[in-house]
Length: 342
Image (tube, rainbow, N blue to C red; front, side, top):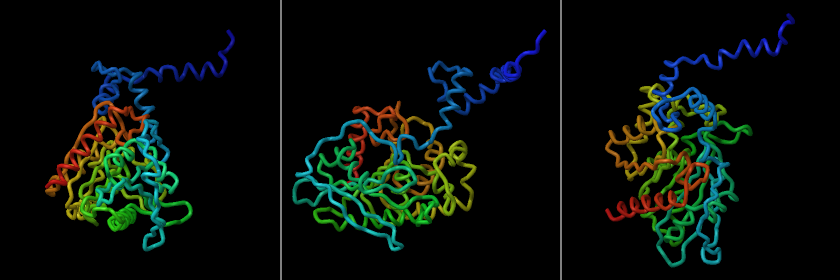
């Protein structure tokens, strides 16, 4: 008998491994990741577990980062009516914090909403302008009579060119921008709301410890960043996967003292928008929300089924639809209005 070709021998050797996962292993995986049961029948198959593991390798910020674009339509508002304007601004150490804004018609003073994008990087003015002109959430706020501001900040992690970076420095950037916005003509400085997503959401919450806002709207905040700030080293959202599985293990006494120190200084209400209970869910509902609540801070949470990270921008890959956008707008504006009347 001729020997089997080498490639067939190798395949025969690994074939049993493809089916070697025992039922107890699948059961443990199901207990850890109930969302892996794709068809919702209460039983996790090996194929469902395999697909879930494969998907878990993706960028956890997918749907809310600098490369995510919404295809849901914004409200078309003429630039003749509400032109896009730019304010040039720099941080004390020279970081370009220039931002774009649009003003609704009328003499004001107008309520204002400042948007901070997701991800840990820095945007550019072109992208900020496009957000104000095209994105569904931003344009709907403008339609409702809000001055809308699109802002960026320095990166959270070490940069290749050696430019300034760091999460807590970015928090100072955000506070600097909002303080500047309050002095714009036709702005009501007492009705400035900060709306952030993911990395921009935790930035907005932390910045509320530096400057007073009317309130913060935080879409699935990336609490993983202050839980494990990576100042001085390169990083990406993928570096936080293990932390998202067990965030309490990283909430050391030292980190708890550090985070509580700035949480204590927050005086405005916070609204957290949450989609399906995956990804950043544990870090926010095992650490962020309980800590803020324990410190007596006003925190409200709204949950949206069937959508994932980035839905609060109307990003289409998250499962968001125009119905989702309408629900977010309804809930957020109701929250803002109820706090403004207090």
